[in-house]
Amino acid sequence: MRILVTGAAGFLGSHLCDYLLQQGHEVIGMDNFITGSPDNLAHLAGNPRFLFIRHDVSNFIFVPGKVDAVLHFASPASPNPNSPYGYTNLPIQTMKAGALGTHNTLGVARAHNARYLLASTSEIYGDPLEHPQKESYWGHVDPIGVRSVYDEAKRFAEALTMAYHRYHGLDTRIVRIFNTYGPRMRLDDGRVVPNFIQQALRGEPLTVYGDGTQTRSFCYVDDLIEGIYRLLLSDEHYPVNLGNPQEITILEFAEVINRLTGNKAGIVFKPGSRLGDDPQRRQPDITRARQILGWEPKTSLEEGIRLTIPYFRQKMGL
Image (cartoon, rainbow, N blue to C red; front, top):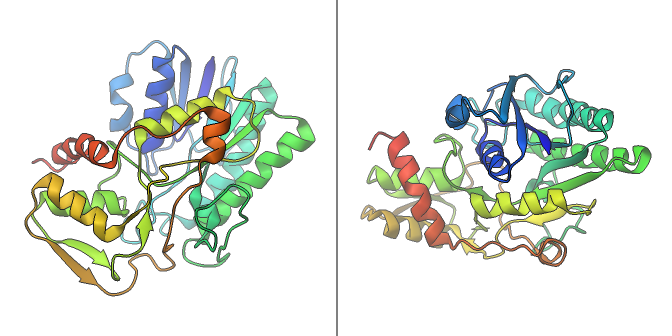
């Protein structure tokens, strides 16, 4: 297939480009580098099956030649309020990527009669009252909170995708992505994996907000990308959760990071939440992914962290 990937220079988008090329497809990568990095695609320079187009998806999209599939991954995704790349500091761009970007990429898919896959997020569930979260759960979201620009952009994107499927008969898919980590994450991403690894590699105590009982479920990037590809090749039109159902507390996770990095500085506790209305629990129910795609993550947390640490060492110049 000839496949358009938006957000191609981002963490997930760049891994997705690599995987699609490995499967023998042609890839058109699109990014405006507002949060993505050219470094993530530098190794693809000169690849005859890879074409890069620098473009903002909130503007009309033209792609020369035939397109067989469109995968819309363009959006700021970091919740870090202290980073210029965090979505709270790019609120309008985030909403436009979810609204106008989704509309424009759906238009490309419709013009080419191509299959379409939307990258949605576990954040559409908000701070969930249901645990673990099934795709049938409607969510518990503050529509005007600090995270709403991301949450509501993705909820709108899902609604628009389903509207194109129902009204135009477009061949669509929606993946709800839970916490994913691995090489090519931004160092200032703001989420717990890069924060902890960097503190540990600097020999600093890991900062845990609150009492550390809040939970996350961490999926290694290679596992996630394989699941996305399986969804692309499937006939499933309704949302599918992809993530690791193994739930771990932030305190337990900090202890894992310190052990794997050999960091003796320990843990320091700070009151409250670093990111405002930070969800207290996050765990996917991946029953549908198992049944429909035959997919579940294979990489253990320790193995995935061991694969990720060298990237951060290199980026930190250690």
